[in-house]
Length: 286
Image (cartoon, rainbow, N blue to C red; front, side, top):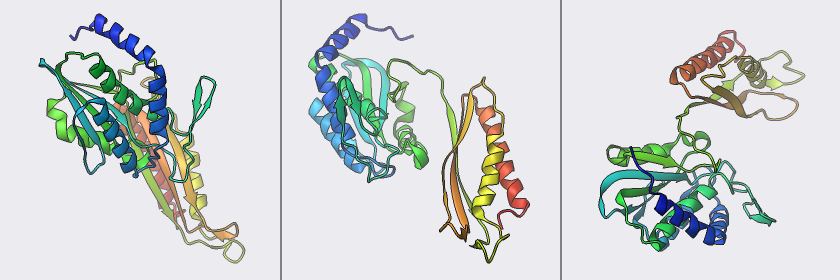
């Protein structure tokens, strides 16, 4: 069992309360470096630069692109990895300028996870400013590919690099003021439907990829999942079609499934795949 150093905790709390404006400024600066899905490199470079300025050791960026840094302890002890993710869900053309309204900051991604990245940087600054002696090693990782179809590639890469060395992990990601100690398993599917398509008048009755997908979504929406273990699903993105008078020949959707129980997640995925297969077998996919 790890004992919390209450004296150090009090020192850190006092330090960060005195440097609140610095933390806010850091949050704003991170947010205003855009990091759309699969385009995190510019923000990775910014975070690496700030970690180096804060006094972190061995700062580097890999091809993922993850940012790695560390603080070595003066005594033997465990390795703690603290992470936050670089990417946001917003496309490249999104205006990420932060607006400050009273005590609130408003901008896409200001919370998820610019605040987490700012916390990583300020964690290093606080520990260095207080000249805090550590046992073991503090490993700082800013990960790529957390959102959407990123498939947690950054976190997977971090564990590929350091997995056997890591004793504990803390991920800083939204919901400040609470601690989540239960792992949530997730599964995401990218589904494409192709059909004959045609003209809405001349070819009326021909299979439409959008109509097929509509049937799939309707059946998925009727699935019942347990509240305990908590399980969820969502069709978050749909696209397809050419024009209002064209029978769609192609459509796509993204499905997100989650559960605190691996078996419940597997059962949900099986049911979703059965729905997709059933509509395909019925010939609705053309």
